[in-house]
Length: 148
Image (cartoon, rainbow, N blue to C red; front, side, top):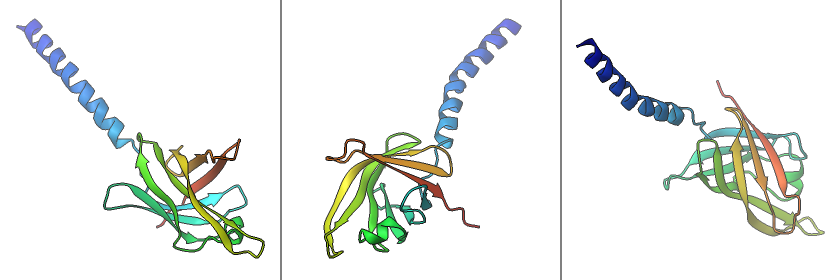
């Protein structure tokens, strides 16, 4: 009788262990939504607000433009990131707005490059892109703005 009960408990444990593991993995995903501030480069201080769209993907709008981005013609409300779709709990693919100005300072080029976004922690995001004519690609670091 005791052996039968032990077997039943073992079977139940083996059945529910994968479910609890899956649930804990899903709960450990980090939300990309919120405000993010760029740091450690020439666009320090720029802020993007990320929100989920009706289509279930994410986009990020500039809410504050600073540093090099100002000189490149970026403006508040520009859609900096678009089509951000989760690939796993910490990785997203999408597109990043790029601008270039002519000799008079007018925006001459506006395009989106493919990006790979990694949430390295709850509060740090690293974005890499491999632009067509850029051997090294680019790397941006962003930190979450915690609002009280």
